[in-house]
Amino acid sequence: MSIINNINKAFDHRIRLGIMSILMVNEYADFNMLKELLGATDGNLASHTKALEKEAYITVEKQFIGRKPNTRYSASKLGRLEFKKHIEALEKLIHKGQ
Amino acid sequence: MESKNYLQDISDIKSMMNKSSRFLSISGLSGILAGIYALIGAYLGYRIIYANNIISIDGYRTLILTENRLTQIFIIAFTVVVMAMITGVVLSFSKAKKQNESLWDSTSRRLLINFAIPLVTGGLFIIILMLKGGYAYVAPLTMIFYGLALINASKYTLGYVRSLGLTMIVIGLVSSYFLGYGLIFWAFGFGICHIFYGTIMHFKYDRINM
Figure 1 (cartoon, rainbow over the protein chains, first blue to last red):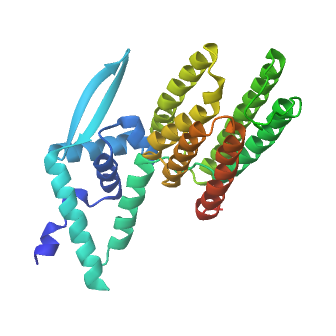
Figure 2 (cartoon, one colour):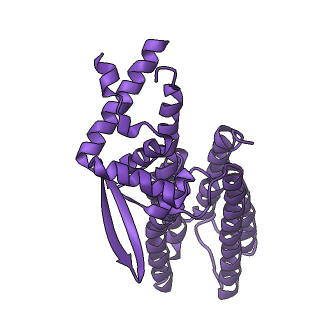
C-alpha cells in the first residue's frame, strides 16, 4: 500500500517529470533551457512550473540579464526528497510487475 | 493508473538527466580524424626538423632550429589544430542533428568553457616559455595541458574523454623526462591515442542512432 502512496500526483506528467529530472542534476535551469530540452510551449511549461512551485518543490528566481528578464528554476530540498521517493516508488512498481 | 507505463517514466527521467547535464553529441569519428591529422603533421614536422639536420651521436637530442624551420613547424601545427577543430565541430553538428539535439545549448557551452580554461592557460604558458627559449618542454606541456583540459571537460560529456585525458597526461609526463623525443611522444599521444579512443567511441556511441 505504501508504495502506491509514494507515487506523487504532482509529478504525474511527462513535462513535470522532465522538469524535476533536469533540476535534479543541474544547480539551476532557466526557462529557455527547460523549454528547449522538453520541447514544450511557453504556456504549457509555465503552467507546469507554477504547479511545482505551488507545491514548493522548485524555487523560482527572477532576475535581469542586461535588460532581458530571466527566470531561473532550481529544485528545493523538499522537491529533491519527494522526487527521490517518487522514483523509488516507480522502481518498486516495475519490479513488482516483473 | 496501474496500466500506466512506469518503465517509460523511468527511462524518460534517465534520458532527461543525461541530456541536460552532459553533451553527448561528441563524435568518435572526429577523434579518429584528428589523430590522423596529427600523425601527418608529426611526419611533416619530423622531415623538417630531422631530415635537414646532421644527427649527432646523441641521436635526436641535438637539433639546430632555424627560424625558418620553426615557422614551418608552427604552420603545420596550426593547420593540424584548425583542421581537427573544424572536423570536430562539423561531425558533432551532424551527429547532434541526427539525435535531434541542438549543438549550441547550455551543456555544450559548459563543456567548451571547462575545456578551454586549462587549455588557454597552457597555451599562454607555452607561448611565454617559447619566448624564453624553452623549446624542449613545448611538446610535453601541450600534452599535459591538453590532458588536463580533457579531464576537466569530461564531467560534461562522454566518460571516455576522461580516459583519453589521463593517457595524455601520462604520456606528457613521460616525455618531459625523455626530452628530445617530443615529436615521437607527441605523435603517439595526439595521433595514436586519439585514433584509439575515437574508434572506441565511434563504435560505442556514434552508430547507435544512425
